[in-house]
Amino acid sequence: MIFTSLPTGPLDVNCYIVGSKSTGHAAVFDPGGHVDKILSRLDDYHLKAKWIINTHGHFDHIGGNRALVEQTGAELMIHEADLPLLGVAEQHAANFGLTTELHRNRAEFCRTGIFSTSTIWNFRSFILLAILLEGSVFCSPIV
Image (tube, rainbow, N blue to C red; front, side, top):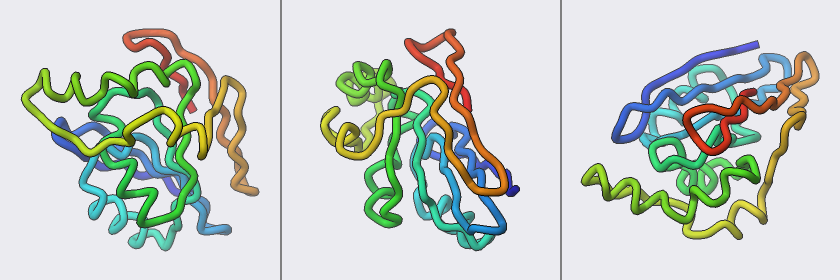
């Protein structure tokens, strides 16, 4: 198993990459931005993004979604309870004096993937399991 992190986006949110050496598949969590850095890290470990997983819908966690999907073809996923946050993400960014390129509507996520508590991502040599941790945001699934 490969596990690495890097700060991305305007607020340096932690983006995590979990990958399998045997399959070369990776899950990228919370690509806040700086997609070039994320792609470089994937290349460093000879990984291909299979899933892009947003732990929640805050603008600083989803800012790199569009570019990463376009450049990797990975499946984009978010927990269904966080869909309402997507509609106000650009407004939240503006509150910080920032702009961000986001997926414009919930339908873009619905076409790709909604995960729920107990969703399993299978890497063959290990699995990741989503659990729900309620806390500072509407829904915070933990994988």
